[in-house]
Image 1: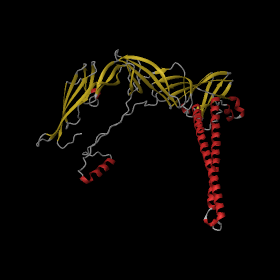
Image 2: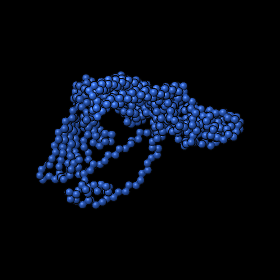
Image 3: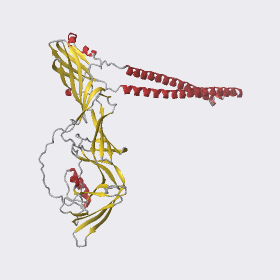
Image 4: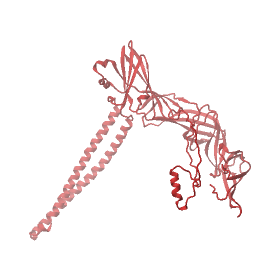
Length: 544
């Protein structure tokens, strides 16, 4: 709570009775994956008549245009927000913060005194060195030419004694300066720790936004102002601990949430609700406009030495050259994962989250579902199969995307993965649980390519692929094997392929040329798949 009596000085003295300063704290928060709705409930009491209920403790980052006000116990009038020229806050500072500030100030003063002492010590060393330089000057030839031998011996003795004394003073002063510097290092460390402790206590941002609410009543009354507004700098992400019981075919999903906020103020004992609604993302469908196409004459042949120059020029003008072999650019597109349903989680106990400091993790409970334990093999890239838990989401809740998914197999930690897509209720998904070292994969390719004779007007490439899955695990495994054959969308490029055995699914997941086999591999056995494909295209064309 913050004292705001200084607000009274902003109003004419004749109106002081009409101004009621109030303080507020966050009472409830609804968090979205990005953003939050913040609620503040502020009790008040006032006499009959018209009054201004003034709050000056909203965080500086509050967007006053987003604030919505409800009022009980009185009639609500105009609401005025002020983000600039706000009265300074007479903040009530805790004794702990005051003590931390005092310790920082004490250490800073002590460090300044210590640095001054070091400077004074070094001045003594500099003075001694100046004496040495003066003594050296006494022995120059110009000053000793008129002196007899006895006088020279006396001068030399004096210079030697004084120089030695000055050197000793310089050394002692330098030694004391070094010792003092070392003592200051401990002091600097203590100051750094004190400043760190103060920063840990002062997590809230400085500055505030003022809100003035006009209220009126025919009689003395008590009521509550409810403020609600959205803030962009807050959010939550789901976390999952996936625990697979392989023997029983059960997957336990321990759900949690990581919460962070940077609204400019600390949240203390607030009622927390998590929502899967995404107010920061696209809310309306895109418009589809007409698509005008046209054709142009092919570019004329260009001299070899100027071809690159012409290509560069045409590229700048946005023209595609017919005979330039260019690969189509891949466009990264965001894939929507929202299925039209929103889920909310009301956390049963109040929570506290410091501004830009805390990362709070809360538990959302555990759900269980049946899992089909199987192996997935992609010998095009991998040398072993991988264990997968195939599930159907029958939990009655969405399983949201997350970059925080920890995997446990029969109680053993297997690693961390991520869930890229939402799993709606009723949808199927495969959860990975690591490599199966005893399920070995080999993929051997035999290639033949070249012209088919001097008279032939076409070229051909053919490959034979043999895939083997060897089971050395000591148990039977249901395996889904994935591989591919090339595909073409050009009539000029003819592709023929065959497989033994035939794949269970062709064009898996609507991906052209991707094949999937499903079969069981018993312990100690080896299963093989053979692929053959041939590509044929006109002579003079390039395969890509």
